[in-house]
Image 1 (tube, helix red, strand yellow):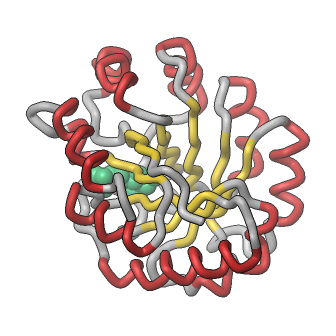
Image 2: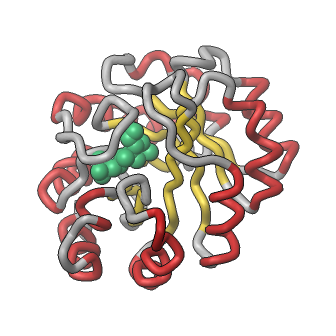
Length: 221
Ligand code: DX5
Ligand code: ZN
């Protein structure tokens, strides 16, 4: 069953010199924060790492969802936990059998999820969804904020919704990349529960208004 919609901000395109202020301003309008960790190897760009997670932990009370776009994600789990992160999500493209990684995350007290890139078929993650608090469906190819939503991933969201519901799993379906009120509405209709919004929030002239518009767009299915 689709859950009440939840809204997260991705701070990748925020003004990093004012990160604390930006997060504080958005905090009342968000359900959680989505942190994009990039290693310059799994994806071409570098973003930020553990020290920034620790700073954000001190700056807000939001649940911290850490999206690990790195080649060796398990090596970061302990650091993420220590810094105050709540969840790690790892790409199925780098970890084709995530059973051990899920156990490692749980042993540390972290929630665990899998991420699937646009070209990867749903079948790659299906056998492991029972291990996951969340399935993160990428709606852009990872690496940069500000890209256009790829509508072809909507079928994968619908496939995931059907699979999760018929297996009776509690796994949350999160969508990430190019989310605006219009694309959020499409993803909600396809069955997404959680919506990661980067540029459309942090680059908006009025981020609070932008958050309210996205919330309104995903209220119903
Ligand atoms: C892409 C990241 C996303 C993205 C979201 O690699 O995982 O979280 O930056 O930003 P927008 O909403 O700008 O696509
Ligand atoms: Zn992300």
